[in-house]
Structure formats: C-alpha cells, structure tokens
Image (cartoon, rainbow, N blue to C red):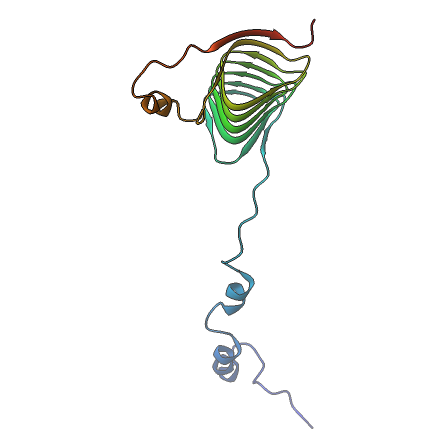
Length: 174
C-alpha cells in the first residue's frame, strides 16, 4: 500500500531542495578542532644517517643529529655529532655535543666534547666541558656571545682581542 517516497532519492527535486539545509554552509567542524592558542610541539631532531654524505651548508633553527659526513658549515639550535660522524667545516649552535670528529671551528654557548670526540680546530664558547679520553687540537677562547663573532671586537672598542689559549689535549693520557 505504501509506496517509496521520492524525497530521499538522489536526483529528485525534493532531495535537491532539502540538501542545502542538511549540509553546513561553512566548515565549522574544522575550525572547532583547531586551537590556534596552543603552542606548536617542537619538531624532533633531523637525523643525518651514517650512510649519508652531504657537501654544502646546513642551517636550521631546530636540532640536528649528524651520524654521516658533512663537508660544509652547520648552524643549528642543538647540534649532536654522532660517534660515526665527520664534519669538515665550521659549526655554530647554542648547544654542541661532540661524540665524533670535527675538522674546523666550533662556536657554541655550551660545547661538550665526550670521551669519543676528535676535534681539530678552534673552539669559541661560553661554557665548555671536555671529558677524559677526548682528543682536541686547537685554541680555546671564551666569549659571552660566541655565536656573533663581529660583536666581540665591537664590544672592546675596536681593540685586538686577547690571544686565544693554545691547547693540544689528549684527555685520556693515550
């Protein structure tokens, strides 16, 4: 006795008339899921694996962990040099942790050479830690702002900076 109504069938005029009222006109659910006031999560460190060889400079405001070889300069917030890593160039970071090899200048607010570190070059730092067993050949210079080399000379009124302390260290006594 009852027949199927054409109101719910696709293509009918009744369903076309009812469709606009059934669907929202603005993407309201997408806006309610997004909270612009919440801080963004810090992205994980970029890892350069041990089989990777990079020729060129790297620059980021984030963190980098190097396990491979880089021939070029590196600028980062936190730089971790893995035991298998070799960097040939200048490194500059707020925090530098060296487990591997660097041939070049190191600039950092906090610089740490672990027992497996091998550094051939000058280190300009605010604070430094050198573990027993680390190999280091170069000069060490403390600066309040080691990441901005131009400010050191300007702060001293154009005078020549003091001679850096020369060091050749084999902290392990090997």
